[in-house]
Structures are given as structure tokens and as C-alpha cells.
Length: 293
Length: 256
Image (cartoon, rainbow over all chains, first blue to last red; front, side):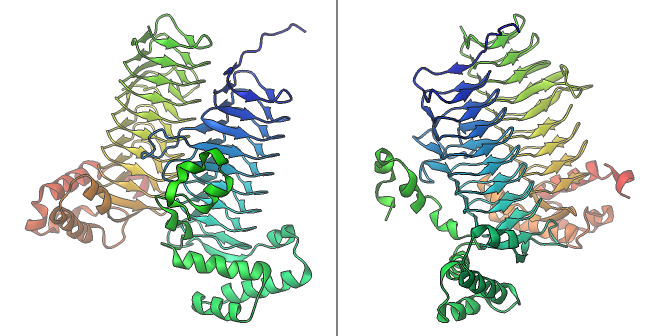
């Protein structure tokens, strides 16, 4: 077979591990780090201040580390950190952070992002999440470990999708989704987006011990079983001394109730969230200044 | 001299201003004109009879001026200082040109059909689809997955909520939601940002209450006649009435 010259543009300043594979027509910017075993297929663009870990698969026409779509962003020193063993299907886009949001967008480990997903500026996607086709995450969103977003769901800025929760297809998420629940609803009037049940696969995937699972199920049933005031039910559960995931669930909902429009992360509007300090490399901590606790 | 990557494929016939930057693997066709200050990033396709106004920025993987069948499209005129983000597809015109005004932000994976006409200062969120021949006025905003149907009309200052579909028309100054399509109210926050006074907004709210309060999807023509004179004579309400009259016949055959 004839040898074909393979074209790609890798900036000389980029740090690409020798064991990484860069496909043809890829463009790698100067401030990019790519770890060993990561595979970039054709026409992938990685720019901005972006660190990609090892063993990731990045399919065709993905764009990672581009400028945020936030009109307030003025070109500050923001970055994107991607962990290990993630799969990015075709045409996934992930943007770097913004000054006002803590300078960082982060994707953890073992996530699957299906074709056309968009992860906007200042989002934190933890580990083992599954984002279906064309899932849109607006800015400043926290997708916690094990969460599943079905195809074409979209999340509003500053919302949180809890641990091992499931968001239904075409569902707009305008408030926080509690952990281990199924959140679904397409229409504006006839089926408003709401918690419609318990995410059984999520409970199985979380690998809880028997006592923890029993307590979590009881708490979910208590919280979402009837229409009584959520605040009262949470206080009752906490007074009963629930622990583990059940207690975390109560705290999650409590925080959401204290936020704006049911979105806990609204309190980070215009300032860096705690995750920024946790995950930003030490040399960038000075940027966070006094806005951090 | 324009700063063109050695890997860019720029046709000899294309006309590029002196300070234009073109990234690697971008493809620019023979009948394309690009005005000063434009940045064309990597892997972008610009083809057909496309004119890109000054200071417009095109992000990776976008395609402008392409035909509906995958080949080159007809005329496509894009204004100044518009951002065209990743994976956006803008089709060239068929009979008339596709027109996009100035200072627009067209976010990731939006699609603009042949002959669509967009005004200025629009913000179109991810995956917004604008059908062929649609007419969108100035200061329009959309949320994710909004659909503006082929030939539909969208009035100025209107916001289209996520997943909503505009089949016929969305009046100016409104927030619309769907499906099913509903006029939700006045887009007061946007109007304030654009310098409208509280008095103007109050009059518009009164007019909307009379015209759209029965939760019908579109204002019935007879309601336009019933507006009280002090409301109907207000210039913004005049604009609203005129827009509804102009668009009332749109798609009426399809939707009864």
C-alpha cells in the first residue's frame, strides 16, 4: 500500500506524550498537554490551556479547550483539565473556564460523552458519568459521579445533577436533580420536568452496603413519596440520624432549596466555587485571590 | 498579507483582506470574500458566494455557504463582528441570499437554512435550528434546541425558550415557549437591557394581556381591533400590531 503523507499541526510547544496517537488533520495548540495512551482520531482540535490525561479516546471533529461562549469572558488565563479513560464521541465540544467562574472546566475519569455533547465553561463533570447524544451542559454545572443524562437533555447554568441520578431524554434541567432519582418531563405544560422515581440502576452502580441501600431507599420513598413540605421531611430524616448516601441526599436537597430557583450553585455566581481550588493546579491558585474561603 | 496556514486550502479566486487569519485545514472557495479583521480557525469550510463582514470570527469545524445537497450554495452575506461557533452550518441561499446581520453570536451546532434572514445582535444558543427562508429580527435570543421553522417570522427582542418550536411567527418583545407553542409574556429583562423605559414595558404588558391572555397560540385578528386606543397608539404596540398583521397569514393553511 502506498505511503500517504499524514498532515497534522502540533505546536512545537505542546507536550504530547510519545505514546499518544494524533490522527490526521488534528490541530494541537501550544499550551496543551496530552497524556500517554490518549487517542485523537481525525480532525480533532485541542486548543487553549488544556491538560488531557491518559487513555482517553477522542473521536473525529471534537473541539476541546476553545474559548467560552460567555460574552463576559475577556481572554483570561482559564483552563480545561480532563482526567483519564474518558470517551469523547464525534463532535463533542468542551470549553475552558472563565475568570468569573473559577478559571476551570474539569472532566474527571471514566466518563462517556456521546456524539454532539457540549460541556460549557466552568462545568465540573465528576467520574463515571454518561452524557447521551447532544446533551447540553450550560455554564457552571456540576455533574456528580455516576449521573446519566439521556439524549438531548439540557441543563441550565448553575444547576447540579446529583450522584447516580438520571435525566430523561429531551428534558430541560432548570433546577438541581437530587441523587439517585429519575428526573424527566418534556413538555412545558402537560409533563413538567420533575422527579418521577428512583434510579434503580444508579443504586446498583453505586455499590452500597445492605444497610446503606435500605436507608437510602427509605429516605427516597419518604422524600418523594408524597407532596408534603420537603423541608419538614428532610428535618425529620436528619433528626432520625440517617447516615451515608441517605444523609447526603437530604443535604443535597436542603442546599438546592436554599439556592435560587432550586439551584444550589447559584451562590457561586460571579465567584470561584470550592471545586476550583480543589482541582486547579497550585500555580493558578493566586488567581482565585480573596474570593475563596 | 493575510496570515494563512500552510495547511489551509484557499482558492486563488477567493478575496481575503490583508489582516485576515486562516487556520490549518480550512477550505475557502473561489467566490468567497473575507473582509478585514476576520479570523477563520482550523477545519472551517467557507464556500459558495459568501461574503464575511469585518471582524467576524469563525470557530473550528463550522461550514458556511454550503448547499443543501452538500455542494456549494448560493449567496450568503454575513455582517460584521459576528461569532460563528464550532460545528455551525450556514447554508447558502437558493433564490435570494442567506443574510446574517452584525454582532450576532451563533453558538455551537446551530443550523441556518437557505435564504434565512437574521438581524443584528442576536444570541442563538446551541443547536438552534433556523429553517430556510425564516425571517428573524434584531435582538432575538434563543435557548438550546429552539426551532424556528422554515419561513417562520420572529419579531425583535423576542426570546425563544429551550426546545420551543416557532412554526408560524413569534411576536416581537415576547418570551415564547413550547411545545405546544405559547406566548408566555413580555421579555422585560431584555427590554430593560436595551434601554426601554418602565412605562414602555408596562404598556406592552397590557397589550400582551389583551392579545395573548387566552393562551391561544397566536393573537386572533379581531383582538387587534379591540385594543383600547391609549394602548394601541403607543409606538411599540403599533409595531407589535403591524408585525402580527404582516405575519398572520403565515402557515395558517397548515395550522388552521
